[in-house]
Length: 215
Image 1 (cartoon, one colour):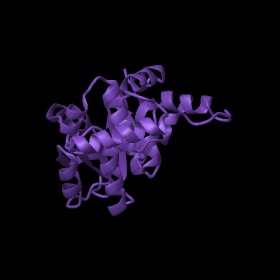
Image 2 (cartoon, helix red, strand yellow):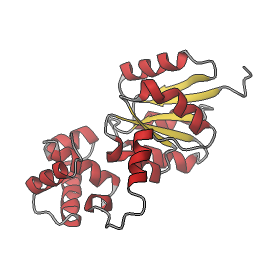
Image 3 (tube, helix red, strand yellow):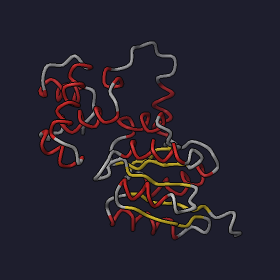
């Protein structure tokens, strides 16, 4: 295997055990090596600049900022970098948003052990990667004439706020987890309620459950 043929991968995930698990999976391949890692969004942006990776595995739920925000920043600086998003969330919740933001693919952490190597090889060749299940879901909706759901009008941060509120988290808790002020989160909440024509958090939660935006 020549040096040129080796795919260098950067891992950004806040859980050390997840990073180690991913590294173990990749250690079994001859053509993929881990060239760097980070445990939060800020470090991911700083450290990837120093690496020569072709593929980044990026967790969508980093402790200091939303993974899609990190994705957008990284793609601005290095548009040719293939970014494969990792998430605990079902594909129908974040996959389309990730792809629209510039991701080359999306993997749930549950499917990563089976699909990770294939996905990395595919996106490193300039192709997109989605699971067969999501591909089928998208195919089922081709040609359907219907309006986009209201939650598709939300920004990435507003959508994240919606799912967290619907999961029972308070504005204060959300602010702490996202490293934002309570005022900022309250503004996100107010904006998303207006956009979605809802009156309060109870209606928001009902909408999220009805549309399967939360488990």
